[in-house]
Length: 376
Image (cartoon, rainbow, N blue to C red; front, side, top):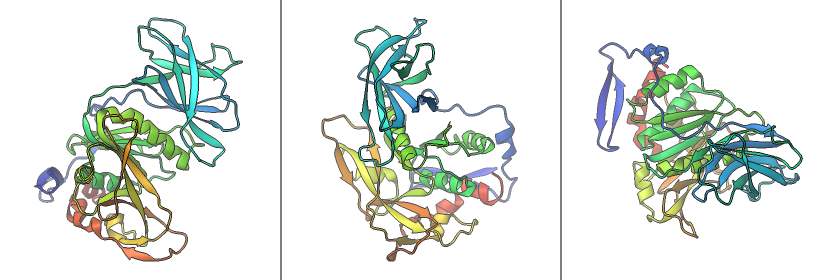
């Protein structure tokens, strides 16, 4: 049985074990045929390859055009056909194609782009879009299902997590537990290595944890690293921002840690209401201690100084303007703690103990306790 304990500091319920009663029967959570209904984020994004062009996810925007995230060789021509599919027609309608670069100065040979497809007038909204080369036939088309734009805020903060080449159960559990403590109420994991059994347990526990969790497959082995992060940042923004007050993309070894405040909501409110983006500085922590009986983030408190000026952007759902106001948090407000195994010695180290104030609640959180007692 789980005993709920309340803490007014975070204004949320933290659940821990009742060690004097029967342990929680976790097996029920992964043997049941039922799973908690997930939030509808639209069609599941999937990679399609055609003529060395990779397309991922599609959206029908407020500007009445299809917008698709794509990756292709920067040296290739972008002369293409596009087609819009409607439920009342058996064949697609050819549209007007254009594209734009997403990645700016990315030096890689492959770049991230937006593909657009639009038509002048049609009374209905399409459900899918397709692209092909000028010489290809219409009958060889991949349908990219479109998510239609909705402006209905259901979540305070949605966090999107980029795929990791390796899966670590304790890293997954600790990441989810900590960010739930600071007020993140919605998660979208893009991954190809989180076991389905664990996904089902976490999904079925989500209502007790007051969270919404979605798992999307990442069905590409070729697209990874910074390009993968860039794609997911854009997918997350287009997919989640209409239903969330704030969105941010992180890796599973990155933690947003407020310094002056206790919750991420307080950090966000520190900035003007019209601030559309908040830049959070990244601090690197070299992992020197890795006792699995205690969260990694509570064992490693020394920042390895690297002068790389990396930031993570939190995007807010504010009224659109021609110029987006950007706010910058300093280390005294909040930062992103990134935990890695360092291969070289840093120029200097300095302590950052801002995460220590969460120690008790972090260790006593439901998922961490389940992990420590081999229940996951």
